[in-house]
Image (cartoon, rainbow over all chains, first blue to last red; front, side):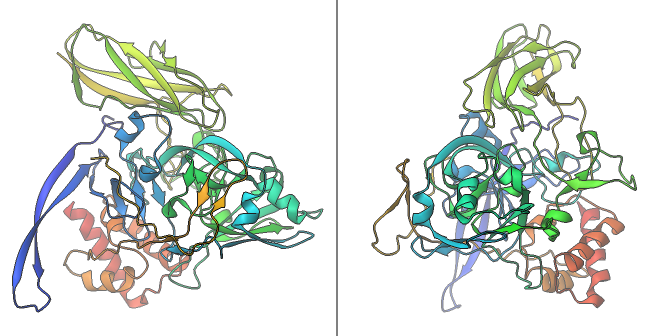
Length: 410
Length: 108
């Protein structure tokens, strides 16, 4: 498959919009430039609008207006390891999202199987010891649009991910303040977003009690040194380093300690994967044991060259990109110009923390003119490498195949 | 093209700023508006049914971005909306909606 790492072409198209005057009698025309992008999704449709209509957000790929699904344009990842807040991707499940939040009135409840239920103000949170780490937040379905056969769901290219420096407090410290009772098994987090249909399941996710208390799981009040954009979960969101973003509950205002395993829809039914290597099955395969999605796996991307680019033959070309290990650090990034028969180690950039993006760079030379391709592969510190071929599952989760980039040398 | 859009942040009240203990991070109240979508499903047999039943909970965009899918696949998507997400879809409209979605894929 070609083009899955492409920096898609931007198309500019003018649309004439007829707008009626207030009186309705006189019509005028207003020319408005609408920017479009073509995502290289096999079989299409790949056309999306680039939108600047969302508050606190710069240009984003519009996947859905309501509830918002906004993808980070891939060229953003070439600028540095930290994804700017105003172009960090956005994904909401339900359409009723509070848009007015008063920091003096907001409270976070801690309740359930605890000694002392709490109602914490933002002041209470800010007074706890602060912690900071750099971590990738990646949608379970990032790159779903490249699955073949195609599967329903958000038709993302590779931009449903981002990396930020998160500042907040340990979930453990908040739980300790309430005092977890013996016999607690899970901690369930709920956000302020609500479904339109009132009987629909409120979005909630649970972590095992040991995980919730591991001192890495954080309630973040800042990303990249600023308060969270509303659409990224202002004022508080959970940060679960190394785990898929479905656990990173946004606008979290309710923490419930459970003494029984969570059976709510979003933990038990939704966001499950086949319990198979690479969460991969054959289309139509039956009797598959499903388990909740959990830890991330390694990925790597080229960021300075689009698939289909032209370069000079017999001359060195500088490549660069990003890699992440998933649930641990990056040990190695390799590139191959012979379809994966031989690999050459790329140079790694600064390590900003094991859960974050890591820069890599390499030089390649294609000796002869013509069409070529090269591959990039990340190996993480657990010794796990990206697989050569893609996985498949009906939800379109956990894609991490080695990316192949097509170029033309002349 | 990557110029920042000025955030429409409104500071509510004049209380002392909420600043972190260690990091100099100040939290300010927000009062924002999210854009609405006025996009409708393209005209065709069943477009009234899909517009009337589906747009209350989500805008049309993501549906129109889906790949071509089989009738069974669309049926299971519509049933997921009804059974899992409690979408108030009129039972007599389910078949019409599924047929509209299949036809949409054939046009792509």
